[in-house]
Image: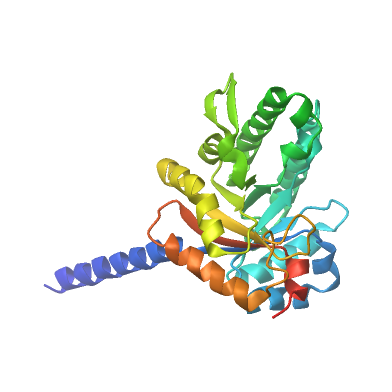
Length: 289
């Protein structure tokens, strides 16, 4: 009888733990980009305090090979203690140029070396690419070739990150659901292809109202659900001359938080919705309340 009771207690404990783990896995992302890693070199404590105060649980941190590995190690370990996952961030439009993949190769080589030398609590949790191939000159002069080069780059990244046992993520403009491809990778919509071939995407849905954002991201969230992936919705906080509806810079943080809450509520039942990302640490720190 005692053995049966103990078995029952153990089973209940396991079910409870699994329940907690399932809940933890379903917590929506609140992410941000940290483009200036020298910030953690000069003010690690202040940077961590800011991230903690904003309830951030994921940060895409730019990789700069000139920064000592120990700086990243310390930051990742302390962030992890606060429940913040750190992803290695890099990418540039010219990575889709002929031989541009060598720059991605350098990133992966640096990451491989770093991960081997870091303690478990100091390792990066994943890789986050921000390539933006549409800013490369070939996007306008030879789009089909550039799109294929981008797909090849991500395919190579997928293989490299798998070898490192790290998930691959990518930034995606909201309008890639209007870009088609027909090449050796098949035929279809580029946004769907990227979502299918990465662990998660962060959609650059740079608009300043929930209504606009919800409309922009609906196709990608549906693709996310189709492939069992999470789409994180990114918004802008920096000043821009691209139009009045692009950024929350003018409206301030309180207004932004209300709109983002409305987005999260709108997609609360959507399996393809993964949370919110705020671009980026520097401009977020100085935005109006």
